[in-house]
Length: 414
Image (tube, rainbow, N blue to C red):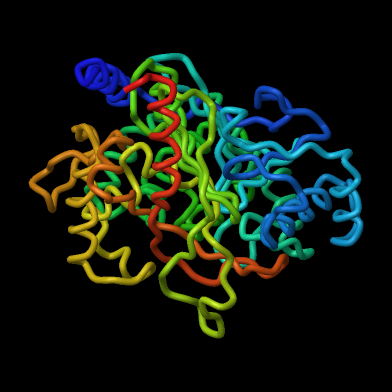
């Protein structure tokens, strides 16, 4: 049986190593995301009903309903959400990922990433920036205005540019790791590299100079813009590891602000959950841990694919944002080698003699060693409408892995 597991895991990680994710376009969610319709709103993490959702998730959904013209106020949006007319489903069930609350509504523009090696696609909304934004649960008028500008100006401009050429996202990530990013909580280099690519395409369009200028200024002013590209990049790769008999590789980790869930390759679409942990980190002035919501978001797909907390050695400066020391960043990556089955040579880290990032979280190794995945994360206020209040670090709860290994034993008879 051990040989079967090793062979299955080898197949799984070979798929992620051979993947070639590229940005092929951008479109409205309802037009490109499989299974999306007018009454569906997607969210981060494993499945959850409205009555169990956390404050920032409810705030983001209310904002999405206001954005869609389905409600005029938070109160109206709550009434509609409680009516049963709106379906709430995980992003992961629709080849999609979303940071923090992960809310995706029908009219929102989403990036389209294609894994050219295998032909599958993944989707994600565009990044709004930090602070008081929809993904952290804010829904005020300025939040909606920004989303409308993104829909009316940013989206059409990027759509025109991407008609000219695809953008190799794997190559951007590889370069960014050499420039101080880990492509989860630090995307400064990756955003700059993407901006360089998209500017050259924008200049080949017939767009007005003002439009191009506005788009460039927005992306330049948002160093986290690439997060919403690194996530679907990782999703397109990680999905190829799913459905392999006997494989113990983790194919998804996600949080909805109430529960933390994981999926295992050979166990299909089943979620194994535990209470979402509280992040430890740095808070904006005036806020503290008592204001924070438990961890949330699909952005842990980056760690699942060997980036984020698994690539912290590439980004020692991230500790200024999340807390800790540069030595902690190095040790984080070294520790994650203990629970993974390979390294990704495409994602090498200069500070570790150009060794690849630890890739392929192994359920068995997590349980055997007692080491759980390290995750970089943002921190949302627990009440709807406020937004981001900090950033930090968190560990995946061991309970998820214990539940998964119990189910694995039941299924395989190991």
